[in-house]
Image 1 (cartoon, rainbow, N blue to C red):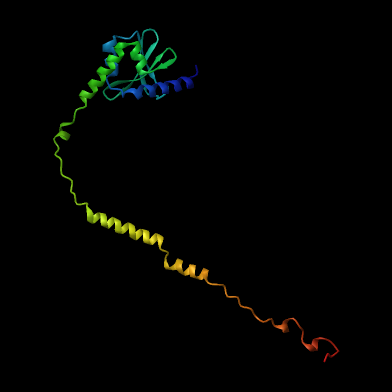
Image 2 (image 1 turned 90 degrees about the vertical axis):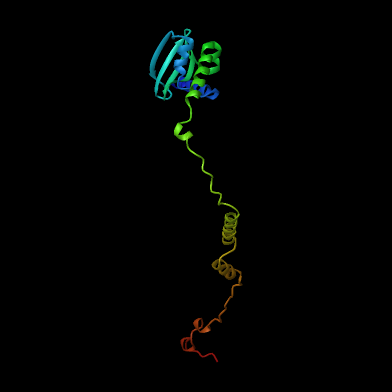
Length: 192
């Protein structure tokens, strides 16, 4: 199996694993606590995210991948041999995994309490000065803007008037002197 195809499958597994629930920081510890020590363990770099990755191997070929987050290791993907499997499929194969994920999720919720400095802050009433007068101001500005956009300017009106006037054609009388030479240039004969 090529590395690109395996990376693609790992990406699909990551998306499938994260779609069901968000990972908690204590996933790895919860899995080891509920499922016991793994048959084997490896550390390396993820081919997809290029980050540190820790892999626990259970039941001869079930690979559980974890990546470091603030506060611990979170579950990212699982493989059965060369095939990616979802979080639900891992839970069906290892019931202890399902319990571990629920335990990690409840532990993560318990640790996300409100900071005491934030909890001690008081709520200030919002100044409700925005009201009908400001609304009328906005309406007046919009109407003014529309008038300037819709009504043509004086320059545009002048150009339109010039274009709508009929074109005056000036005809000049041809000067025959330009085309007929004077009589002294005609020659010896007089034509009278």
